[in-house]
Length: 313
Image 1 (tube, rainbow, N blue to C red):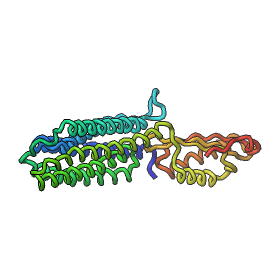
Image 2: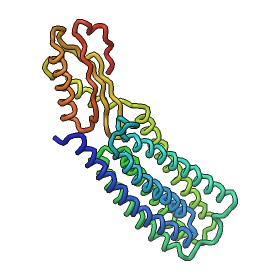
Image 3: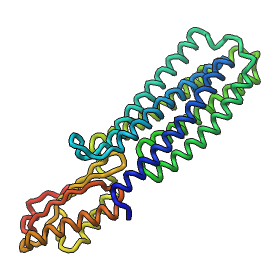
Image 4: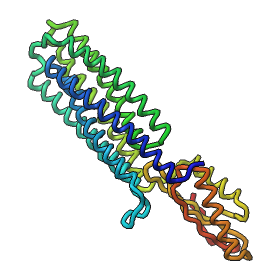
């Protein structure tokens, strides 16, 4: 079983690798989408390109945040820097939400001003090809990052994988709009589909951003670990020789790591050394069996005082 330091090192290396892959892919997608949107005069593809530009920024910030979060605990941050990842993911979600609101505003203004009625670009076919390529790239990127999240349980990778899949849906809708316009180039009234698709894409982006915001707000507010993991840890603590009762068990999540506080009751007649050994055995068992547990504080109570302690699970 790997120790906590090995787990952290491997974790941040994996997350850092995915951050760099996403940065390179998003830069490429942003260039081709913005070029295609301008070249083919497609507001839907241009909106998609602006969204990818935001992805570039978040990928860059994610890379920097990963380096910061991987720093060891120091005098000013004695529990480590893991929550930097949650904080950056929260900022990432706010940026996504603002992007969605801006795209909705631009699309509505286009409909009000009648900009969508302008003549279609003769280069519409190129925008269609670009959108198809973008869908394939985003789906592959989303799958890769999702599998990365499954291996690391990184909240940042989870948020980014969701964003990639939402982008794929958005680009697919862009592709549908471009096909409709390409096949009906003389129908001016039908051109309103372009800003409408932009609004739908923005709503998808907005929904994803709100979901990411809610998830990471919970982590920053010291959300407890899952019920399943909590029950598993309780069982492991009770299996330690000398533990008669669990008086208190609390946990809090920081990024993909967990900190635990536990109070247990033991025989009143045990020596200080014997009680200390029980506490150390609990720590060793929990940390060795649960890589996500970074730290555990154990307090020993006399069993005769068990009824005075409140159970918190």
